[in-house]
Image (cartoon, rainbow, N blue to C red; front, side, top):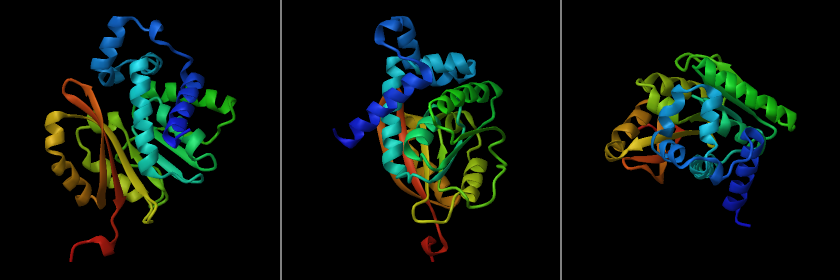
Length: 244
């Protein structure tokens, strides 16, 4: 079986543990259409309700494509220490902890009490199935409670990018947290409008200004009529990388 197919299979098996099995017939057409169109706005709902929406066939497929792109670009090592900003209900973080960094650690930070509560409920399920390396913090993105340059990978996910008006403080903290090492990576996964995609150079300039070197952009495809899933990879710049 190709590596990416095996990863997707493991991800769907993981979702069965985390959320319960789901089939197309379990989701009414109206709800399926609404989730496909407004799913990313539903972060305002309670964590458990949000998880149910994430368990629709539409969202399962989208998230499996997303996790495949993240895994390929982050190049996780088994003992990596991973920080996720805006971890929400920690679905992706739980999978990364369980399957991609089994001897490492994943730390998720979110500003929402509801999301953190739902994430901790998910963590209990993972602990019950033998995975104990996911840690969750209710905190502020702008001031992280970690020592400098201790994280192998930093993730900034959908809601952090789309729902947080000032990305600059997050990038500052990401740069402070990430190691200055060849294997270190910043991964941003977001929903971009078509207009934002056309102006992505401005976003790349933000990364450069905050000490990161953009490496690659993967467009997952059209999520809605005017929205695309995008995964961007960057590495921490060193003094040698700076223009003279």
